[in-house]
Length: 293
Image 1: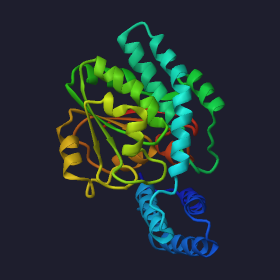
Image 2 (image 1 turned 135 degrees about the horizontal axis):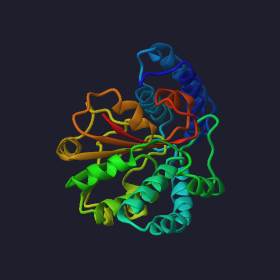
Image 3 (image 1 turned 120 degrees about the horizontal axis):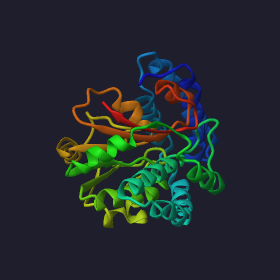
């Protein structure tokens, strides 16, 4: 997926928000904003991929401010919020009468978890809005390849699950449990170092995912989405050996669409911005469960 003109405003807005989280030093803040503007002036062009620009932006902010994890506090709060909501989501999944129904409900809960993204202009979430989104998840599902994903999963032995955000990872446990119940070997992947509010090993431990998935790996990098040229050999082996890939969030949606995929990838995310919504030909604020290619 390539950038739209609107991406420029979002990239800069998120940069300012992250800089303010990263440092309270006014001089550092001004310097960082100036450097971000220069970065966008150099690299923002029609052929750019928004997630890759986001990676460059975040690395620059971390380097200039000396803060390796600007969203550390926000990720902790997100995890705690998700943990409080987990029983509500678990009940929704448990109300499914069949394995396939429980699988779909878990997919929907995982997608609603993807609303837990920070500093996207025009996008906010609270515990109350998330409860509403859980209730309306099926109605908001405008791209529905869940049945196709279920069929592929039933006939597969292994799946690689690419996580997105802290907080969201708590709801991913619901779907990973369903995949395990279906007999799949699940490898769960988080980022190798902090980027935005993406999940890392700390969030794996908080959510208990290390006790649910068969294996947990990291991408070996702090890139937004999938930067296949940067990942660790451990991750690359997991990616190439998995029969099926489940990928959460807009970052993976923006980057996986740039590759010639050789196996089925199940994208699950909430359209939290217009450019991503436009690319997938849906409205903003909707749920997408899309099988690619």
